[in-house]
Image (tube, rainbow, N blue to C red; front, side):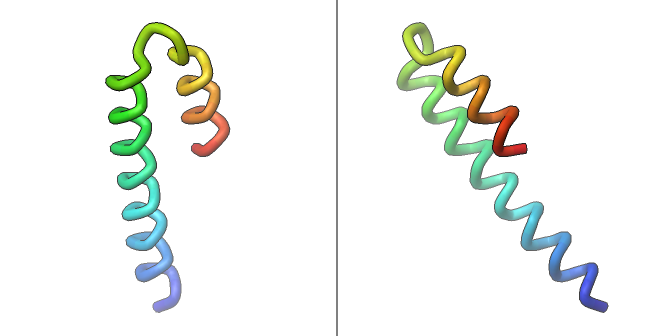
Length: 44
């Protein structure tokens, strides 16, 4: 029973991080494109 809430919580965190990364990518598309990519790979 402890696996289900943990999974949902992790999914929510991943979704929030993905959305934040997308917003950052849009705002800083050309200059910090590689930095955002590295951050996304490290966070995941």
